[in-house]
Amino acid sequence: MAVEKRWAPRSKFNRKVEVLDQKASTGSLKADVCYSQDISKGGINLETSHGYKPNSILKLNLQLFEKKPVNVFAKVVWRKENRCGLKFMAFDQKR
Image (tube, rainbow, N blue to C red; front, side):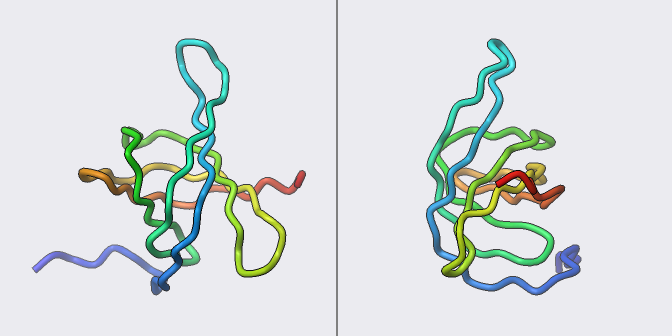
């Protein structure tokens, strides 16, 4: 039996998420659209066709409930097939 590492309960959260990933070769940001599966205070699970590598830092733009979109920085903790788990790092207060 696997040991549960999550400290916060997950909730279903099926939403479109814009992901900004910095391309190392050019330094420019590219935007991808992914879909969330669930969310917690600590992170989010995304369904994606993009190969985000573990330890990558991504900037997410997501709509929480009916409020305006929120920008958050997150670290890729794991990736398996078409899903990845992200840990929230910091919220972008500029938006």
